[in-house]
Every structure is written in C-alpha cells, then in structure tokens.
Length: 211
Image 1 (cartoon, rainbow, N blue to C red):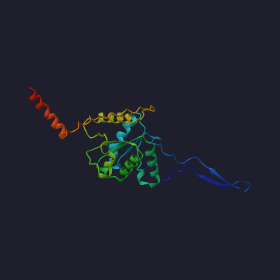
Image 2 (image 1 turned 180 degrees about the horizontal axis):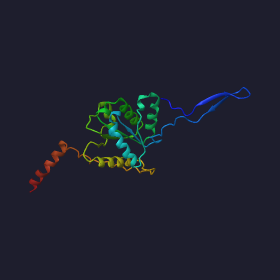
Image 3 (image 1 turned 45 degrees about the vertical axis):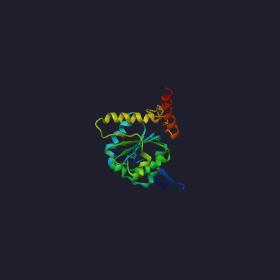
Image 4 (image 1 turned 90 degrees about the vertical axis):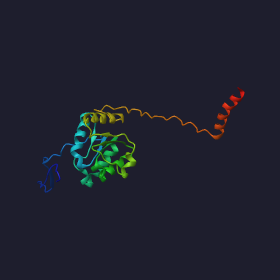
C-alpha cells in the first residue's frame, strides 16, 4: 500500500487562478532500519529469518553497521537496486549457510556479485549444509564459523572479531585489518639422481679400500 506524505487541494483565488495547497502529512514513513553505507551485508534465506535476526542484532549491539533485507525486498524488483548498492557499499558479506540458503537463487546471486566486486566473504553455518557447485568457487577454502554448536555466544564473539580483522569498524571507530600470516612450506629437497647415488655409494667403498 502506498504511503502518502501529504494531500493536495486545488481552488480558485479571487483572480480566477488555480492554486495548489499541500496539507499536513496523513502518514509517516517507517524509520529506516538499515544504515547507509553499512560495512556488513548479511545474505540469507528468508526461511531462516528467525535464526538470522538474533545474529544481526548481536552485531549491531557490538556497534557494527549491518545491512540486511528485513522487508522481503526480493519480492519487488523495484527495490533490487537497494541490494546491489548495499553490496557495493559493504566491506564484508556474511553468508548465512543452511539447506535453505544454498537452494536460494537470491543468495547465490548476492554471493556471486560480492565475489565479482572482491568483497570479503565470511560464511556462517546455521546447520550442516553441503555447498552446491555454483557456490564452491566463491566459498571453497574460506574460514567459516558454525552457529549450531553448544557455545553460541562464543561463536557470536568470534564473528564480531572476525569482522574486525577484516577492517569492519565498531561504533564508528575504524578497525585496523590484521595481517594474514601465510605458512611457508620448506622447499622440497631434490630427489637423488642416478649419478649422485653412484657417487655416494662409491665413497664407503673407497674408504674400505684405503683402510
């Protein structure tokens, strides 16, 4: 249902001119629940809303700006540009994974768009779920969190800390991204060649003859 900001009236003045008058607003628009330029975009299936919203509120309670589709924007193509813009503005996309979300075309599109824009992805499993082939390229090998275990509060803290490590600020204070430590593998030793093996074998023989 459209919400009108006011109403108009038309009447004639003494000179026969039409005048347009604007009355006071009959309705007020609801307050926005998503901040502009939110640093975190939460991608999820609407079927998991009851599980996802407490996580969103926990992040907001930690001073983290979060954008999440709270009004089923996907149902209206008119509003799809909001989702595209929110992904462009975010720093990190938190992907809430479940059987519902891995089957959701909208979640797949959001993850692919974020990946194309080089956004950091942070998967959070709401339940054990298999990653479909269409998402394996984007999510394979990425560190994830599991929210279906016993220590849920610890996972929420780990999520907030993980976002901070990826440069997400809290209460307007910019976080410094933590450097990623890459484990370097030792260079493999070259395999001995036939010549090397012959030389090594000849040494003890020569020593024996000299003795």
